[in-house]
Image 1 (tube, one colour):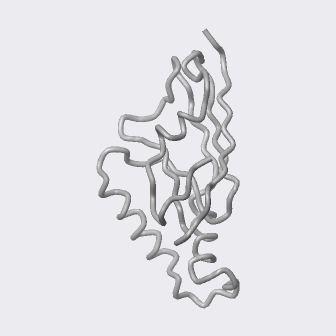
Image 2 (tube, rainbow, N blue to C red):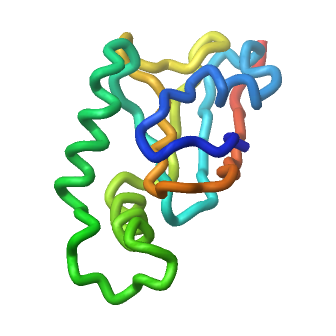
Length: 133
């Protein structure tokens, strides 16, 4: 589970790995992640330059503005754009495991993309599986 976060793109690689036991014992395998929500998403992206995070938020707000004439508005003006963003980005990732570590690229990190102005905790289903040492 992720604690509530402000709207935006949050690098959560460490926070995610802290929720998994024994990944360091896997020689090779897979790490599927599934976010059980419709107004947030998961992504892999730049893990070094923090300027990427507000730029991603800016771009997504340009693609899915709150000003469109949405029909589904009962949960506030940020709700329907959040659903669209979640559908565009997705709620699941599968990352290979190699020698006890995620086989991420040099500049890749796991992002929780929070699309609501005020959210609660986000529930995550994690499974690390593969061949152990």
